[in-house]
Length: 242
Image (cartoon, rainbow, N blue to C red):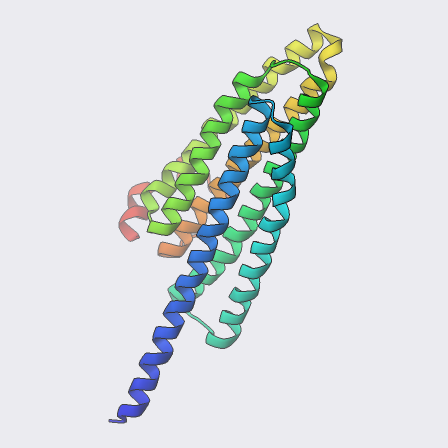
């Protein structure tokens, strides 16, 4: 038995595991920042704080930089380690998740920009109830998606896949309400359109949180559940397989 070769292999394996853990740590840090971006963007609107909204727009560059750094490190891991099986799935899931987190950051920036326009136009608080309700829902989805990724919790991930349908329903209801209000008062068109863009951004954040949940299922058991209707998913089999 070549003891020196065995020790070298163990050292390489330990280094590889550390690199994989570092990728997850960086992804969670990016997720924490993105979650705060969404929270601050909505708070800017509800509290009438345009300065906070502008900070959210400025911080979007940091989110972009974090994605670039994560992608670069994932590429290095793929090139150096040539991972297989679950290790490969982890690297691919991190790359995909970072992309969705960056897009959530983009949506937060859109919310912040539209919030600043509404605040500076002093357009009242019509539609704020709907924004608050949907924002709380999607922020919880983002937080739970990150938790499910950190814990490799397929049961929580599948719950989020079903929750996205609820967000879609809330979004459609809010849009109908705002359309009715806009038709009744033509003077409100500009402000209502801004609110619609905000609600659309929130709905998209829910979609991206749903994507994160799907990556958890892929990471844990290799099942690709993208483009599969929630009612067609065998939750018991997925959780048991994970």
